[in-house]
Image 1 (cartoon, helix red, strand yellow):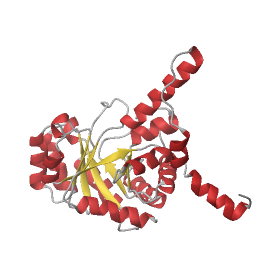
Image 2 (image 1 turned 90 degrees about the horizontal axis):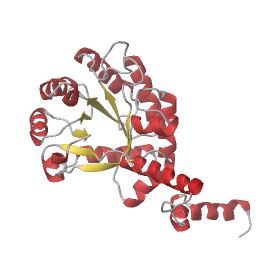
Image 3 (image 1 turned 60 degrees about the vertical axis):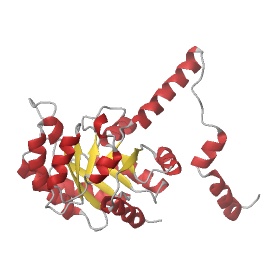
Image 4 (image 1 turned 90 degrees about the vertical axis):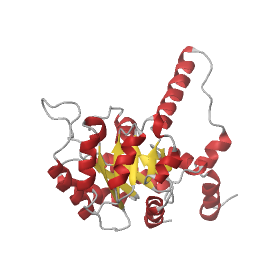
Length: 285
């Protein structure tokens, strides 16, 4: 498989008629699990990458090279399931955004989002604020310009719904969707009425992250142009909880967390494939 295969599959999702959920992954093994259980696409979030690589909160301490390296390792392990990435603010200004697109394209991702949140937080600034529409447009246009493979999906992302409100989200949708992007990603949608308002003026696919329980209706989402809805990052949180419980039990006594058996680990690590390669090239049985 090549990156083109995954990118073609991801574009088919965006151009399709149904909303899918993307599995949140954070390393090669979690990506293999997402593949084995049948997810049609995977998501690497900036917040999860910061936790996995640095053990730090989501405050833009992670560097582009660290993020791209993690994405590359995931794509190497699972090249045929599309990986979409949250590339945050593109690690700087519009020119940095172009570099971000270049690096993530070379890493093998199928799609990436660039957002208009004012990141990293500036001195004296509120915890969350938006760039001006003009600066946001500059970043999105730079992202589209920065790709060399036209099959790579570039998505504009805005937090306008949860930072300002629906009217601002609609303004940014009108501005961003005509830049050549392949979709619009909205965080913080809670109500069906918000999605209905977005769908009325959207002529690109819609993606949702952090949606409220009212938006768990995939038939409704499909009918209103939503093609990907994220489920959150419970897979990473559950993994950390299991590691903590296991180490706590080993140190202090108590029941161990449920362990992956050898058959599961052998499958996820593709043990049989490596054994066959060993027979072919290292000799012996």
